[in-house]
Length: 71
Image (tube, rainbow, N blue to C red; front, side, top):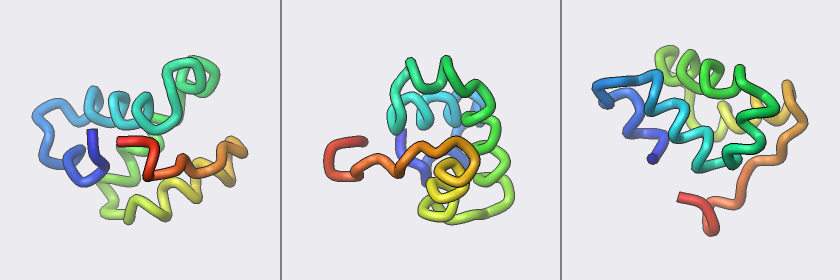
């Protein structure tokens, strides 16, 4: 799931969760369940992907995933 595809998804909640799992892994999402909601809210607000990854880092201390190895 790509960040830009979330807003066009029929189920934005599931799309946000799939993106979060793809970027950080299921174990991380299990540890920090609010991350998919944070991503969804950012998508709805029109925030760019890089800013969302920075917000996740600031709130949860998770470094931005390497885009070359993810997606």
